[in-house]
Image 1 (cartoon, rainbow, N blue to C red):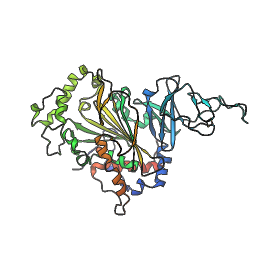
Image 2: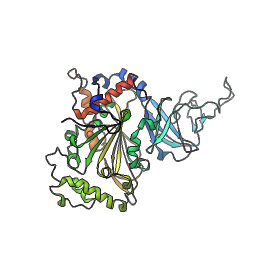
Image 3: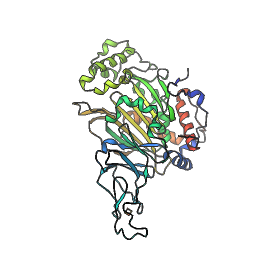
Image 4: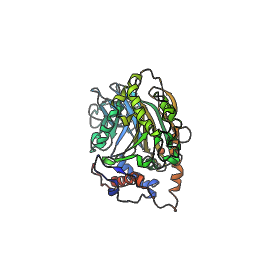
Length: 439
Ligand code: FES
Ligand SMILES: [Fe+2]
């Protein structure tokens, strides 16, 4: 049996649309390939620039660095947000160094030019000393497309890009019940990893590695690929729907209730003893309990979720570099960005976002128990601190894979059917790099 790819939403059948482009190993280290990705992909797609929660007042800004570029997104008087390249037009100094801030004007630290939140130059030293006349009120920072969705502010460096809404397509509606815009980022980790960004994307585009890299998950997530729905969405996005509160059907312990499933059941007033030998019934029972007890316990957001969404893990992979792993109690953002100069390094973000729940002051996230507050960013080199045990497991092979890809003994992949999204990802990347995408 090969993996079945759903085609409910866009009529795409993966098995008939794949071309079989070779996944060349050079693409993981070539500087020329990296440059083409910058010119043809990164500068043309939508990126998350920051959280709307950080943009409460006029003049508040978030700054995001991507590769060698830096973008500022500034809250306007009418509540909208504008994005600008983070470069002073006088002599190019970066205007803003902090990732989050706010001031009535953006003042350059070099010669003190002051810019209004809408990007207009307000004042400059010696304004009469310009051959073309006083530039104040005339010069404007270079603005780029900017949009708000899901609690994030997004930017795109391509002035002719499609709207964010068109780019997300059905993803926006599918994610709407989770109420992402109301959530708080309670974990905010960023690691520099010694591998090309696509190595991590390949990992998130398959679940074939779950039994080998994440055996612990088999007690409460049914990772059997024949029980998992893989669904293709427009614009290269995809999702994978995996059942939670159910042991993996491919585990020899599929009929046993092992930790942490037992505790997860007790949390919803279910006694594991009552379900001995009936592990397939736990998921439904938890859905009913969450429905019954959730709102009174402060989990008001459950009301908008379907029964499946109350227990299952829905992984959305947004082309090219973003994964949202949705669950009823929060979601992870797993983002991979290119290193500014080295194709054999990348920047990996792991965030966790949750709804505020009345009376809850501490929450469990992938790195343990943390206070329920908006987290500060923690940056480190991969290996120096944990990214959460599951992400650590994923990245445990990233660097050795990067090394192995250099071998003359490796000439391209031999993929299983269930890894079809990897093939699709690389073919879409080829389409972008070769100018075949007409978004
Ligand atoms: S470079 Fe900004 S004021 Fe001179
Ligand atoms: Fe994984």
